Amino acid sequence: MKKTLILSFMAFWAFAGTVSAQDKTAEELVSSMTKADMTYRELMETMGKSSSTIHEGILRQNKQMVEVGARFILTHPAPSHKPWTIMVKEDQADFKNSLLGFDGILDEHAKNIVEAAKQEDWLEASSSANELMDACISCHSMWKDKVQ
Image (cartoon, rainbow, N blue to C red; front, top):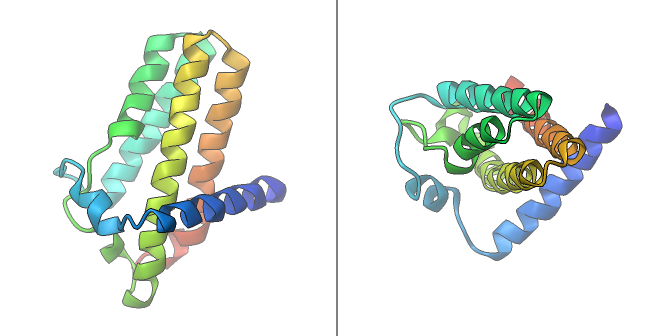
């Protein structure tokens, strides 16, 4: 488990570096999304349900279920408030960087899951779903205890 978390952290920081090079900001990312009538916590709960739909779709070998779960992850809205405001001021800049990095990582894994499901490569879809979950757990490990 520690090895998986370490690899996820490494992937995150590698990806975060490419995001910084593109000069995209967390503010730009959030403003490019539809604003939802839900809090960040509710958004994360819905992302978790989407992940569950993906996993169930893989177990049932149901491409449509996989696509439905992945679609929300790929097109999720922004919460009704600026997400970084859930952190104390001193952590907000780092949390913004995490939002940028992990948003891209989750999209990449969701796309890989859908592509594998389309090919009916269920073991690859499962492997990509595990990578998606590892990324979620990595972010939660970094930030869950810092929420104000």
